[in-house]
Length: 84
Image 1 (tube, rainbow, N blue to C red):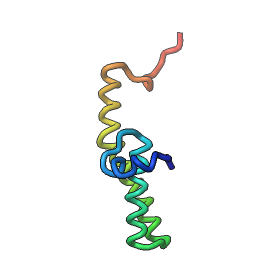
Image 2: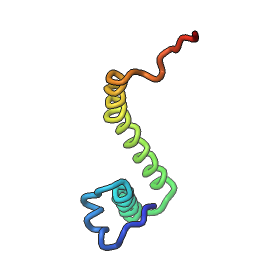
Image 3: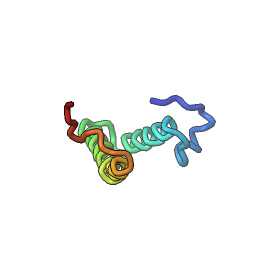
């Protein structure tokens, strides 16, 4: 868990400016949700599933296309290499 200055909490929850603040923002959303729905295994498992689904979708929709563009620009490290 990132530890940010207390005076930055309110802004970081709305507009995180770095990875630590983004982690803080997501953590507070999860904590608030868990407080509302209750601390039960099913609810905690649902949170983990939602976070994992979000991560996978972000990778599929944003990261992978970006990487494909960079492969075209710079070449692919996974190409077959010929031994000389």
